[in-house]
Length: 349
Image 1 (cartoon, rainbow, N blue to C red):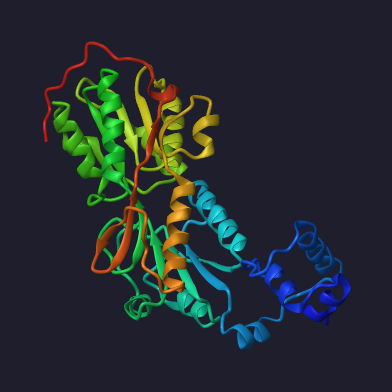
Image 2: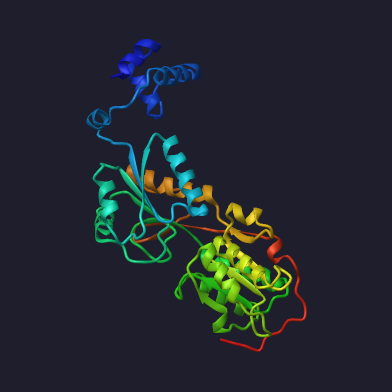
């Protein structure tokens, strides 16, 4: 078995320097870049593998972070997770990942915790109950950071101002001449509905209950809705979707139903995933600041690991927990760029 001493002997540096370089830790003494490159090259040539048990005994740390994710294959969350894993690895951590359908099930979280992880990232959380095990370790101040929870929750977190995001979309659609704007969200209590209603009122627009459709995201669900949609005189001429995939599916369903986007119905989504740009009719969407999301998660996590207060940034503090709320950016594309004229409405909520 190759050891740090073997690498130190072959490179002519100390074992401590080899250890710090290979763990991507800050060096207490200056080391030339070519020496760092030589250490890593020799480690690769010798097929060095760190002894995790020995590291834990020596440094009292595992350098392991658990990542519990839901909808891992969703393009938006896949991008966040990939960026997050890369950032954590750059800081010398290893990441153990598990994909779970329900955060109320504690089994996967307990399994990760039993691997001696130092911290835990969990998301996209949305609203919903927290499993007793997660609640217990969070209450004990074990480093846990969630992302995208919709309500108040007793742990550190990073989220998006969803009410503000949908309000930007409504203002844009109203500015393009639309007076009947529908809103498609995953559940009747979704926080985006607050922003939708507020923005509609601010624009002087009425709301009909039938214009609000709770529907879980996904291309096929959106496609089915597009096939069933109506375009009568009191039906929406524009729709906002809480998920790009559902919006893209909706556009396909409209096409199969004989409607044109944006000539007959305008569409906007949320997430600005790659498909939004490359769809045949490019999709207007709310772009999320993925790098800032990841930076917020990592900053909160490392602050807890180092038992330091989080400073020099603007989180919302609730009960000692850190909650960073970020803004989305509306990216306007073909699906909503056609100005509509001569539209009225006689319906209200």
